[in-house]
Amino acid sequence: MGFGRKIIVCLLMIITIGCNEIDGREPVLHRVGGGKYTWKPKINFTQWASNEHFYKDDWLYFGFDKHVYNVLEVNKTSYEKCIDTGYINNITRGGRDVFPLSEERTYYFLCGRGFCFQGMKVKITVEPLELPLLPPPTIPNKAGSSRKMNYSVFIMLLVIALAWIFV
Image (cartoon, rainbow, N blue to C red; front, side, top):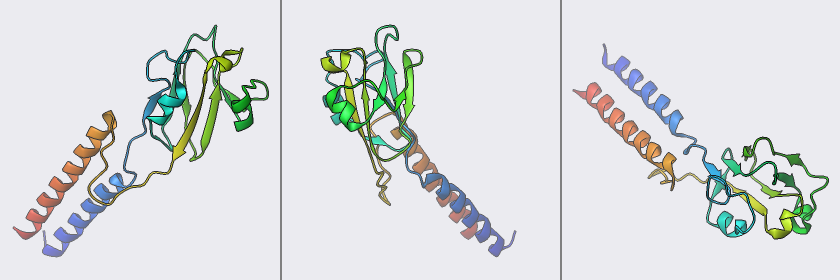
């Protein structure tokens, strides 16, 4: 294979691998309240949310007893006043329900049936994702390890391709 063709193949490999790296992170599933079945009274959801970082395309997981509790997406006023009528979306399905964070905005959730007044409400602020050029971000969850591996694979393939061209 000629030198020019090797360079073109190498550039195509780098572009292909680089395009895979552009988004920067995998979506994260956030367990609301921190556990498997923690959508219930006596949990400080405000404190839990303040220790999390939410980004577009992440997911919320609500685990609860569907015969007792529910999950309603509401507006800010309903959230602040614990109003469970006129909600935006009832995401209650089976008690192990997920909700996609599809936009960078603030979401408000509460439990109806009077439980909101016992603290069963959470405000989720979806932050813009800021990607540094180098080094890749370390995300404090299981997705972070695959991100580091992808970056390492990218560097290794780049070195191999360059060695292939010039050796």
